[in-house]
Image (cartoon, rainbow, N blue to C red; front, side, top):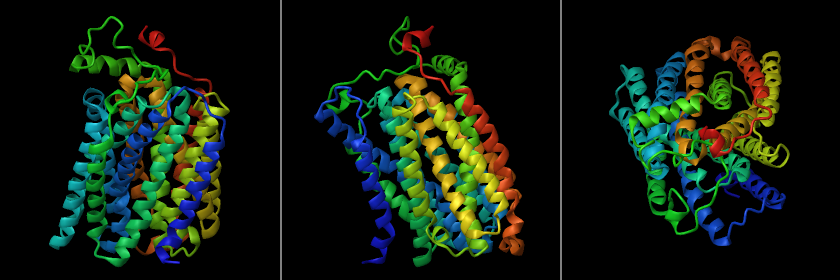
Length: 469
């Protein structure tokens, strides 16, 4: 069997098993026609793969950093990532409302094109042989990349809000988690493989090529609503502000004042604020696990299956976490997202403490990191992918995703500015016990996320009429 097939076979098997399990679950009969279901798949699949390759073009920096060695230190990596993630988080203030105004299809095309260009520019810097001032140059280009990347999550949720009913969205949250997980696999394993077999610049060029390919697929197949795709529009049963209630068509959301008004209404929703605060913690924890484990395993020379296949392991864990969180949320907790968020954050608290206690046991630490990735991707897929649609409604989902995902990446930025400058560097980074600050910094974030999750245990979206009042 070819080596490349051996590497992806576990993921293919897992995807097959997950598909069978989801297919066999009791279905919520919403009366969708076979034609609608076929067209919906043709809509979300290319859109979702574009989003997965955006992840590849976002987290490929870790593979490049490992390949470049001392040219970019751990502290430099933290600085570059902090710039990018803060740009990403702040950009949502503009890009969330913009997505509501012009539609998710157009903004996903902007995301793919802009990120592809930024990745080409980062690769071109390495081709040029520039080695002085590489940190500020990469910080600027990575910030540019992350500005366009910030359209991705808003766009995919915006489009799918019109295609999925409230009672299906936990399952969609699982799909969202699968797409994130595939993107992490591409970013960490494919990019590491590229770095091992080609010059470092190809870690940036290949994601750009893939994004260009799926730019075309998105342009050809993706449409914002079922009606635009030639099938019947559906009632989604979600919350949000009904723009038709006493507001002239186009007058409420087409102006800056209207956008500010909608944003103010969303920010006065206590559930949205709590979800955003939980996702701030999710951003801190997710980046602390993803990037620093990838660097930790190289610098302390971990030698186990998880360390050697971190991208694939993240993918499998994320798929399981996303599907379990979404399906259980819909079928056990009646589409309430708070219970699963609380349960998974309990896993994060326990996991961070065990990591702290076993920092010198590479195998145990690797297993716990995997379980924690399952939990945190489950939370993120469910809250950013499903709850944002639930509480924002299809009209305002861009603004709500902007609020929620903006906090995710501000959490990441805080992580890189704090933990990124606290982890060991140089010769000290080769000793596992010097990394004890890594899991310790995750404990308070996990505890806060757990406490906030219990605050929305019973939260479900109000009707549009109630939301308007």
